[in-house]
Every structure is written in structure tokens, then in C-alpha cells.
Length: 512
Image (tube, rainbow, N blue to C red):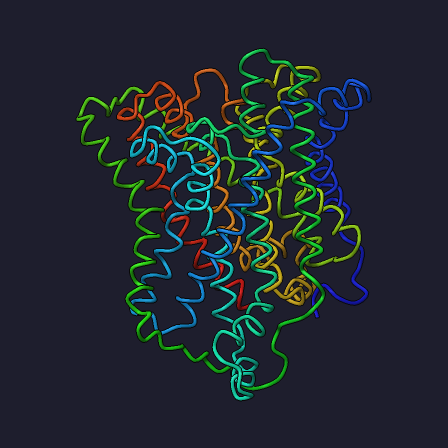
């Protein structure tokens, strides 16, 4: 089998490129460690163990304790209704429940503040975050449910277990990887989110770091907050890995997998329909309604061509540059992981996942500090901003390319080389062509992330650069909600097809 057994040593150039990428990816983590060491133990303790940090810690923990369980309940419940019950219109609901992911959390917050201007505090933040992030649980859970072999469920039912017992004792344990992975993504998004919470005046570590940076550029205090934030992210990663367990849920054996039986809802059909309608209405309909309402209220004058068109073009340019760069640099890492698996390739991969789990504000601060002190000529350049996008979003490309490479047998490469082609030519003609669709899907997901990225863009974008996200933030910060609406609408329109692609790809990945 490809990639297993006594595989030859990886090409030196590929190993070198992957190693350089891994070292580059560790810059943010190295920055946090270095700044903590420079600050000194006593000063670090004093800055970390102060009332301000305690307040931020309580806010963050409360938010996590409310939002993560809420998104798990909503995401798993929605996936079960769509994939395991005779829900009318379940194919439509399958897409509609993923649709809120097309609306950035800070646009969602903008819409809710438009509806309820007095909105603030932990419960308001939890409401907005739950409505914004539950698709991160729903999408992988629905994909897994659609591919689970129902034989075990049918056996449990034949032994007398009712539908609820079958779900909790048989189905739910098989969803552990999807559920914990989705919960991890929700937790990381909560730690990284800035705009949504700043708009409702709810303070978290990210909003506090940004305030520190904007007001006094106090590196020491901000760095200590960043170190606590990074520690949270690493704890979440460890907990997610440990919660996966070692059990296997794949089907082994010949024969076609039977389709799962859908449970009748009977008298619960109408409540289920109303519940899903309320959920999608609050998570997708309300934000879209207020964006359109502000556009209508603003009239033609809010479509300022001199501001609007450059922001759109710069967003498209940065999105394409980030997508292409992340896809290209992910290839060496993915190639090693698939063709030459082992501790070396796993270690290199881990460095990328650690960095990508960090909030954009930490990556942005690391690049600002390193650029100013080491290479001031690259400070506030487009190249530095694109490099930050690559570090933040490379796993989105890496996962897709790995899947594509795994489906491109290395025997085809070997046959091409046996016919006289060079290894590089064989890679271009065979492997790259077979991997191209998966790479394109990964690039599309990176593009989606870049279009809606805010904090790193605010910190690193060159003077004069205005993306749709930063222009929206500038207008909404000035309480010009009508002026911000066109930028919000364009972000939604650009994100919608990419969200659908993510939903479709999750189905394919679940079946592999």
C-alpha cells in the first residue's frame, strides 16, 4: 500500500522545504516564549496574576462553559434530525443549517446590535457565538452520521433498545471524533474572536490585547495576555487529542453498507420544523435581514465606488494570494505525510497545527514585533500579511491535499519514472493532476478564511490597504451601520459558495 512499509527516504528538497516551513510556523510560539523569558519570572507573575487578568479569565471560562455545550447540543441535534429522522425537507435543512457559517461572527454581532442596541455581556456574547459557530459542530457530525454503518444500530434495536437508548449508547459514541473536533474548533474560535465581542462591549483576552495594542502599544502587558491566550489554545488541543480515544468505528468486511432507517417524528414533526426554522432564522435570516435593511436605508450614496471597489479588489487579491501561497507551501508537508509517514513528518505537521490554533491577534503581534526588530523593511508589506494568512490557515489546504495525495497511487509515479520521466516531471504529470481537485478545494477554504479575517489584517495590512472586513469594521466602529452594510453583504456573497463547498467536502471526507 502506498506510504506504508519500508518506503524510501523522502527527497532532500521536499524534506528541506517542509522543515523550513515548520520552523517558520513556530515563529509565533517562539515569540510568546521569548517575550515571556525577556520579561522575567517576577514581572511575568505580577502581570499575569492581577485582577484584570482574573476578570478576563472569568469571562473566557464562562463563555466557553456556555457556548461549547450549547453548540454541541444544537449541532448534534440538528445533524440527527437531518440524517436520522423522517424530517420533511431534510435535504433543504441539511444545507440551511450549514448556511450561518457564511456570515462572519462580527457581522452577526452587528446585526444583533442593530436589532437590540443595548445588547452586551456574557449572555449576549454566548447567544451570538452559539448562532455563529454551531455549524462547526453540525457539519462534521452530519457528515459522520451520513456514513455510519447502521448495522450496529439495527442490532441494538433488535435487542429491545428504544430509539433514545440506541442514540446515546450506540450512535453518540461513534460521533466522538466529529463532536470533539467540532468542539475544539468552537473553542478556538471563541478564543480568537475579536469583532463580535468588541461590538457588544464584552471583554475577552483578544479584545483586551487589541485595546492594549491600539492605546499604548505596551508590549509587556499585551504579551503576557497573549501568553495566557496561547496556553488556553494548547490546553484545548491536548484535551481534544486525548478525548479521541483509540476505538475504531470503521466498517470492515465485504458487502454493501445498508442505508440507515429514518425514525418517524409523528407528533414531533411540527415542533422540529418550527425549532429549525427559529434556529436558521436567528442565525442566518436575522443577520441577512438587517444587512439588507441598512442597505435600503442608506440608499445609493453608501455605494461609494472610490472606497467600495478598491476594498473588493484588495480582498479578492489577498484572498487569492493567501489561497495560492497556502496551497503551494502545504504540498511538501502533505507529500511527506502521505508518501513517507513517520515521526519526522508527524512532528512537522504538528508545528503547523499548533500555530494555526493560535488567534490571529497573537500571530499578528508576533509578526509585528519580529518584523520591526529583525527585518523592518518587510513591516506593513503585503508579503508579510500573506505570510500570516498562510500560517493561520494552512491546515485547511493541508488536510485536503493529504486526502488527494492518498487517492493518487504512488505506483503511477513509479511507472512514469520507469518509462524515463524524471521524478519532478512524473510528479507534475501524474500526482499533481490527480491531486488538483482536492488542492482546489483546500484553496477555496483558505480563500474563505482570508476574506473574513479581521484581527491579523488590522495589525499587519500596509498603509492604504482596505479589505472588506477592515472597511466594514472601520464603518461599524464609527456607528455608520448603513455604510458598513455593503461590505457585510459582499463578504456573505463571497463566503456562501465556499461554505457550501465545505459542506460537500465534509461528506466526501467522511466517506473515505
